[in-house]
Figure (tube, rainbow, N blue to C red):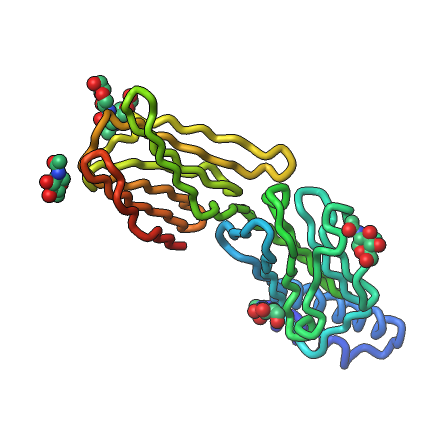
Length: 264
Ligand SMILES: *[C@@H]1O[C@H](CO)[C@@H](O)[C@H](O)[C@H]1NC(C)=O
Ligand SMILES: *[C@@H]1O[C@H](CO)[C@@H](O)[C@H](O)[C@H]1NC(C)=O
Ligand SMILES: *[C@@H]1O[C@H](CO)[C@@H](O)[C@H](O)[C@H]1NC(C)=O
Ligand SMILES: *[C@@H]1O[C@H](CO)[C@@H](O)[C@H](O)[C@H]1NC(C)=O
Ligand SMILES: *[C@@H]1O[C@H](CO)[C@@H](O)[C@H](O)[C@H]1NC(C)=O
């Protein structure tokens, strides 16, 4: 439809003698041309929730179409988290003075990739506060577009420590502790590889006020002598982390513990 309209304009341009009118029509032509490329300019960001790992770098992807050459001088790339500026780029350079202090020295764009339409952001040393909605904006001389997607941040739980104690009353206490994870884990205790004894355990979760990460300790009290294997399973589903530990107890005396297995 637009092509048809432009064709008609070209025809009318040819028949126009007055140079001022020709110029006006040419301007209109350019304007319409700008509008038509606007509809083709579509930036792409991830469609689903992105996952960042606490303390590590995360790449937030944003791609835009480049027709012809990329003019860094007249273009602008802005990354926002909620209303805060995460990273700002214009006049061909990063503009850290506009960035929120929370992100100082932690962000970078891939300058070499920009001309290929890559506005992806690298965020270093991810914290739990970095979770939330991210918006990528790309503006060129003619067009501008923003798109958002959510980022979740999770942390791996440390390899658990195991402590087995014989209590004065003849009972046995099996204690497992693990630190530095997020969000709260799911825990399961099994006896003899099948009987779920999670309801007989006592679990405590504590939060580090500085990092927001959790420490967990879980305790199973056994009635006197036990001749069975015990399995402890801790999961952090956000990171597909599963920690599983088997403990073999023979006749009340714990003779061996199997090697821990950790699956990320
Ligand atoms: C960022 O790095 C500069 C130079 O190394 C330093 O002066 C500044 O304190 C750092 N800012 C933050 C928030 O770490
Ligand atoms: C953007 O550039 C980074 C760094 O080279 C790369 O890892 C990423 O895959 C690029 N993204 C796209 C969509 O090409
Ligand atoms: C544990 O307790 C909850 C609530 O008391 C109950 O719904 C669940 O079935 C119990 N699980 C087992 C394995 O006994
Ligand atoms: C220990 O004994 C109590 C009471 O006899 C019982 O309710 C509980 O289920 C036992 N614990 C385990 C882990 O078997
Ligand atoms: C403990 O279990 C093992 C294997 O299941 C068995 O050979 C042993 O006799 C048991 N010991 C006692 C005291 O029941």
